[in-house]
Image 1 (tube, rainbow, N blue to C red):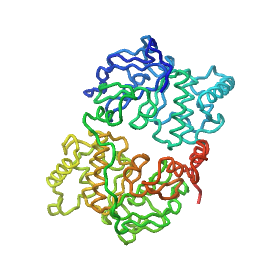
Image 2: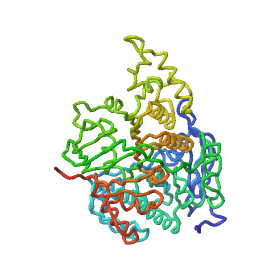
Image 3: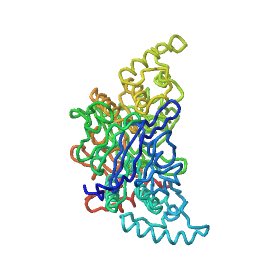
Image 4: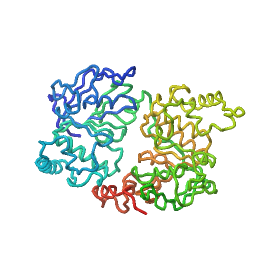
Length: 536
């Protein structure tokens, strides 16, 4: 991998002894890091390792309690984002900072106008935008509304915003989280072009494959400290995972071939229209058998959430659904989470904090929710709190929830341990069907390994599992069959053993045929119009 770095060049960025605390929590502790110019430098670490805090200090969102920031060999003060921009630093956030009702051009100029007269600023920006787009393969329509373009194109707008403000250093936070594989590949080509032109890129990602594919150097953080900085060519995903977690981590899912049994869940012609009259599910049909994992792949917002909500009893629909051959009510008259539990369905929702937990309540209360009327938790007309507490301790022990404190509020656990609490509650109720959405979203790599093992163990017990994930690696690793959703439709089903990310990515963009004949622009055009809905 070639770069423009020379041995005598000063670091593009050098952080010296950076420390930052929030009350009793020390997010960064005496961190030092050097990022050389013209390189792509990856930063990885578990949740809570301090990556985002460190980058927020560099971009002026936080002020460090101690330490120094040096840019191109000069010590600088960065009290706010304007100072960061003035120092040549730009940041592309995981959740884009764009005004959807503005055009691309208006978003790029916003905050960087030459004067109160907007027309000259827009004319100059249009010229510069074309030059930047041509130089870095960042082609966008300057007059398109942001609301009318796909997420891949929106990401380009964010990069162009930073370049328009003369950024020589770009920080990208989890940049591929909402992209198809083809869009991610195109982003990598853009980053390589930027590097060739001498730009310096800091890439924050939890995807080890991306680190190995695109970076020159990678720094690993653990518990607020920098544990290592290594040349990417001299390391491996397994070595990086061990540095992140502090122990060896199994990066692949070990599983035997599935032994599918009887049909547990049968869905036919499922349709959902939201309160705005938008058709969110359009004739969806699928089956899940005992002893198998059916993975649902797709870009977020293409009907997967609505599918889980209907099957979990949270939303109304038309169509037909049977569970173990018995019809399930979809009208809402007797359709709720409790009725689904009686039908043998357990549900791990996509958003654990908004839908799976009450964050101010203790672990033991959260694990009891939905099952508080079980006979073993009753003492006559009263709830047996001691039995609930002991049940929680047992579950937390089996699922390695840390700390093992049933009285601790859910909000005080890490994201991975919050997810384990939800999993323990649902899996240990011996369901016939487990609905599980985004099982490892925002979860540490060590917890990912554990969660994957639990899903496969449940499958091997003969349970049916419907898995929704935006992570294609996860879908491919866990699924026995893969179905792809696009714009509320089922695009088709594939065998994980014979498909690949490119083919699945095409289906995720609503396209079939030869992947080699389809451009990223065509994919983005399809994605931009997906999810806008069809009035019925």
